Image (tube, rainbow, N blue to C red; front, side, top):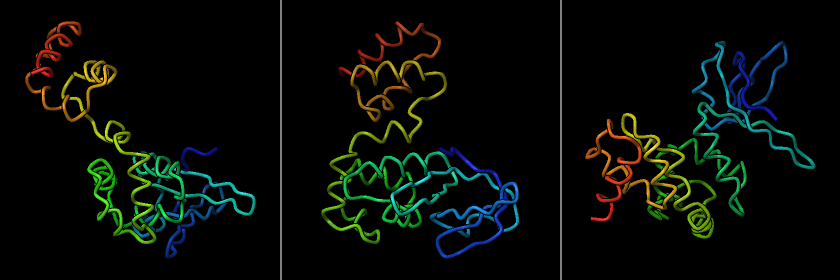
Amino acid sequence: MFNYIKGIVTEQEANAITLECNNIGYQVFVANPFQYPLNEEVKVYIYENIKEDEDSLYGFLTKEEKELFLKLLGVKGVGPKLIMPMLATGSVKGIVDAIDRENILYLKKFPKVGDKVARQIILDLKGKLASSFETPSIGGFDELVSVLEGLGYKTNDIKKILPNMDSYLKIEDQVKEALKLLLK
């Protein structure tokens, strides 16, 4: 399995690029081919889709795009050819926000996404994405955030109390103080 390929973009097509690496040209399906500068070296995060009748590569500019792609791929009835247009016309943050807010209208604006598919995406992924695609901590509170998430608190609630926290306290004292603020 590939994580990424670093190479030179030699061709741009409607939905793919050719990425040359060590004199081999890989066809990589991407959301926006013209985001990849022609004849320049780029790092493309890769997902290899292997099926009985197909072996194709899907590429992403960022790890976040790839992670969202993989999460969406786990949804029943959603495949790579449905996800790529979503990534082409929507942002990672926008898609994650729409899922968490149950915004069916936003999801239905993408090609081939109807009411049934939008509801299935929300059902499968609501509440499972925000912590993966946001940086909920503010200066030095990574450990505190992970402890509070482990206790079952939501990322949005945690983010609200972080400005009131003292980063110089021991972690045990930070947790006690955070719990007081969260229980108000």
